[in-house]
Length: 78
Ligand SMILES: [Zn+2]
Image (cartoon, rainbow, N blue to C red):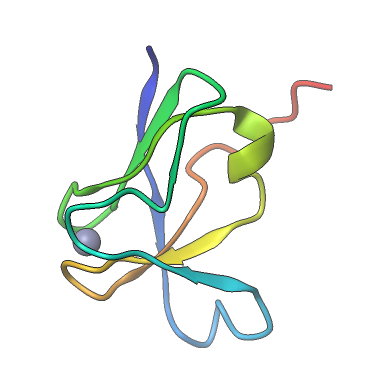
């Protein structure tokens, strides 16, 4: 399964985005696909086995290090 390190955002860059709060030890989302996305700073797994459509455009605040992350790859499949 593909695994991605997410891109870190500054709070300014994340302004206006819907921010999902991650809790350490528990992925924000799990299941529905085959992509695993990790925090770009501390490599904590934020989303496990999710579909790409569930990742697109989301911003996640890592519950471990507190950094803001967004999807790593911006190409479009469809
Ligand atoms: Zn982190």
